[in-house]
Length: 159
Length: 159
Image (cartoon, rainbow over all chains, first blue to last red):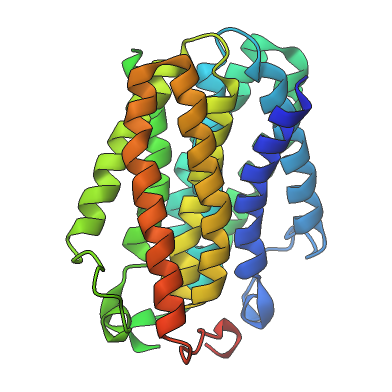
């Protein structure tokens, strides 16, 4: 594995992760109705940090293999949609809009996972927690949107 | 060039571009002091659309070549930071915070451009407009931050 390549992927994850830091859950999120199975707050940063380290490893591991183009293209795709989600959910409070973003994010993670497995077992396994997590996150987003139909989106034009 | 690969990269660009659609400039941006050389509003969506098509082409073109890992890792890195910029600038109105994001974005685009040129002249050329544009955008961000020291960031905790 190329360690410098790992750090370029990790830098991409820092960009994606920064979105969660600048658009944190905050007091508003606490007031929302949530399903019983909602993970406690501390799980989210732990899960994302673990996932970002694992997928940077997977990217660096397959990057040097021939035929890794789809794996890395899906990798790039998940990065953009993962970055987009937090500002829409926590920033604009558009719960259904955020759910719409979950669809291409889930497809990108599934595409990356399958492409990784075709190239390298370890890289595929390194993407599995992300696939599980994004499935849980999408279900949570859907449930929160359903349980909180009266949330008023933030209107930036009035800010 | 693999056309399906092109569309995966383009899907990533749709994610990055959506950030500009959900966090548009709006009335607030019009009130800001801007340097004389600020491009007119219509230039921005045209520039981004052109850039996204060109870099999707570049990604698909080098993806199948051996040794494209760094080019695609930097490609992924630019996608995350490009997605992050609009919510911070137009959403939170953190002009200096957005300028901080321009640094890794510029590095990612430079890294991608150099890596692309090493693999394929056309792919490198396809990244050149992006390198020029992100340099202009960073200069514009810096200038707007300097000319508008009194902008109050949006405090989401009070929304």
